[in-house]
Image 1 (cartoon, helix red, strand yellow):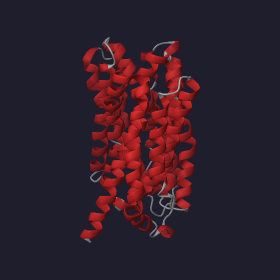
Image 2: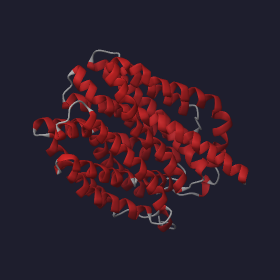
Image 3: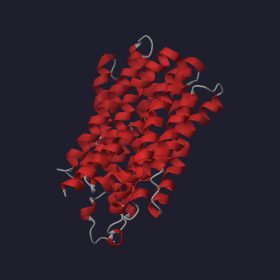
Image 4: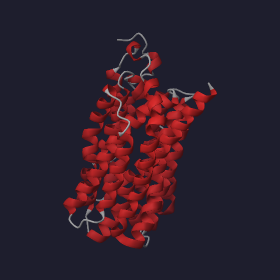
Amino acid sequence: MQSAQRAGRWRISLLVGSHLIDDLYQGAVPAMLPFFVAERHFGYVAAAGITLAATLLSSVVQPLFGMMTDKHPLPWLVPAGLGVAGIGVGLSGLVDSYLWTWLAIALSGLGVAAYHPESARLARAAAAGSHVGMSWFSLGGNVGFALAPIIVTPVMAAMGLGGSPLLMIPALVVGVLLSIMLRRLITPAIAMSAAGRAALVDRWGQFARLGTVVILRSIVTFALNTFLAIWVGERLDASGHLAGEAALVLYFGVGAVGTLLGGTLASRFSRVRLIRTAYLLTIPTLAGVALVPGPLVYVFIAATALCLYVPFSLHVTLGQDFLPTRVGTASGVTLGLAVSVGGLAAPAVGALAEAVNLQTALLVLLLAPAASWFVARGMREPTQLVGAQ
């Protein structure tokens, strides 16, 4: 028993680390945006289009990867997706045209799409369905987001966009290590995850509600990923990129804490109740980000990050519990499609910011957490649905 537990912790640790590196490349895109704006003179809409590039292919392809892994385990997608995610970001600073920049970032998004469903399915097996275990897996991704501006900004500040190939190194190193260790560490988790599938029932109605909630959250998070650094930099009238990048570090860092806190709270309270409460509280905190002047805005950034990220790992475990026979598909949606599809709305937010102003665009986002709270009122814990049709 102790040997099995140690093996499970080892597999989870490996997946947490790889998730950190993978999502570092998602976080690298918003961290690079101010440099694309400064060096290539992209406007709000063009900058939002870069975010769209990171999410368009990912949004479409990620559920397909999930369905593939439900039929046939494809553990090689974990290192392969990770490597492609890094290569795309590394190439984005080397090309001159907007089109080639967009395509390089899209390639990175494709790698992210390949990585997430299979890694989440393997993490569930290694964690034996534990909320805390899955929160650690989700935490890895959020830590990667938080580290992205810390890693990207010094490289970009010192070398400009031409230094982007250096950003490939973590993905290539970890991808090679994963490839070497994959069979020994991950194959046993595949066998565990298949046990008892025939006795389980999928709840598509509840899953549709959950998907709607996460899509609405994604609209807010991607808008903040794209515009928070720009907004805070303009709001505080700071020199250089320091104030904006500090806002991103705070946002992603507190988000990482919120993700782990969500898993811990789910061991004591209803996941659905936690989700409802978090989105209800997001309304006033996000309003503060848009309206509060001066350094006090950082307090509201931290509060907003906490409210948006406490539900994050809960979305993943709820989705897998609502679709227990299609864990890869559920992961592809809750960790993939519903997370990345918010990037499709980023250009609309950018267009509104250019047509009116960025503050108004941020205030319009308040509709999303309000709608998330409303939709979540119809969700039930899977344990309350036993025997329901």
